[in-house]
Length: 209
Image (cartoon, rainbow, N blue to C red; front, top):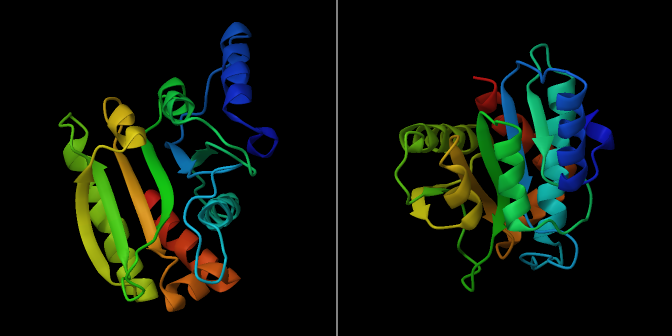
């Protein structure tokens, strides 16, 4: 079913149909992966001309593929499945309407300093019942990526990014900056298929825990 979901509006329509016909949603752990940027919003541009919107979509699709092949698959939805621009408010509405157990927003970093490198994790500054769990999951993902891939950890930080500010009210919510596209080594790693699948597998392993 996930493969035919083209955008958030279609998901809303499908869920309403499920309610009308009395169908129940899956009882599996339900995770919304927010695929940053898209469409005319390319996000950061790497030194090798790769675009953030493409890298995070590649990683998200790899997570879906690995999840489908898993013995204990999760119920995972993406905020976009192709190169489409979805509004920030629609991304957060999806998590709410799906009653998500976790919201994870995927991004890549950029800096004027080409030596800047590593993983950054953001949690919302807003304090809710899900704040501690968000921070814990963020630290676990950062720890896994540093261990498996060899990335440097830049810690869990706090910000008012809209997608985590609006979702932290009803589920744990984090935003991941998966390396610097302005760093030659990390941009090369993020562009390669091996790097994409390594990142995807590391993230999925934590989500399945």
